[in-house]
Image 1 (cartoon, rainbow, N blue to C red):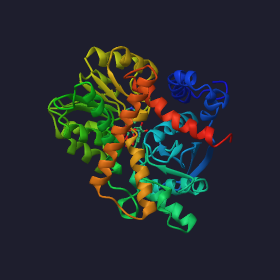
Image 2: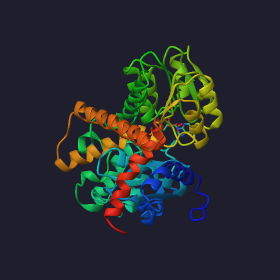
Image 3: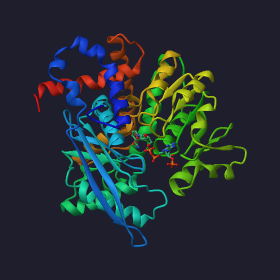
Image 4: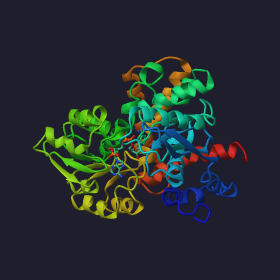
Length: 434
Ligand code: NDP
């Protein structure tokens, strides 16, 4: 904490991982001598830069951009870019740190990185978004490359933003290097099923966990927070598996539809018209809109899928979920549950799928996009989806086995942290001190 003052989110992410690793260090004391913990929690580099751009009125705006290149032991740095006013060094470092272990769990050759800006895309015109993305890439482009660091999307960054950044990168390099960014448009190197991957992957992972406990999505009541990229495709897959999704949200409030959310309406509002979730009730007057997003956790459900943002489930929300009889929680967002909330779930035998493992499907398919770009070919949606499904099953199995081997059977927080850590730690030892 002294080394990284005021970086609360980063401290939280490191604490969760380090707590899980206590039995690993007891079993492998050589990691201590190698200072693996100190080395893995110190980024290779944190780049912070100025992003100036002109708004539609000709006024110059200044934002701050970041890229953390955390660890490239098992492959090029890889992780998304987030555009949101809350972005700062702590947020980017927590996300980049978690990415090391998540990427290792996917079984793909990718290291950990993350980036973004405190730019607020809400209410900006298409031209403003483009000029911001171009200015952002003019600086970021100096530090990335298909074998160096491969950014992707995250909150506030989708295919449109990736397109503008790819265009700028291409102009800077004078070369078409498809593998420098993932989440690209399908016409120029994007992968089918990337858009769906994180949401689908989260549901595939939770499905494995449920099956192991004799449960399933079929006929269960599900609450999904958010209504962005991860949420929409988590809702879609949960419905396909027979669940009734009764609530979703945005940062203003949530909708409750006792008949089950109509996903076509949510997709139209969010993917096409860029509107607020409150508009849902104008199409479905039988549904209810409640202002304030945290109230969503008071909606009774069997399965809760937090898919919006960090620390959206605190102690109080976790207690309400438990008292309403929640059976499983699957984290689609990064670090959506506070450490206190996780303890409440685990103490009350709620099946808990931690983000690092459960939302790894997005980056896993990003790595498949890189593979397709290198081979200059495109797989079908079915091929990619089937690989994603296998990867998620494998992450579940590895996390479960590690939890058993290290005396915390069924604790997937411990299991996924350990399974993700071991491969990176061994690689660091084998590659020497650097
Ligand atoms: P989007 O920008 O597409 O959607 C984010 C959603 O969360 C929006 O509905 C947004 O509402 C809502 N939201 C944001 N902040 C808050 C808040 N403070 N309270 C309530 N709701 C909020 O982002 P993604 O779907 O891509 O990302 C969501 C989460 O999933 C993030 O934690 C991200 O890091 C994680 N993730 C994403 C991956 C991906 O492939 N996209 C991969 C792995 C993890 P509003 O529109 O009002 O802001």
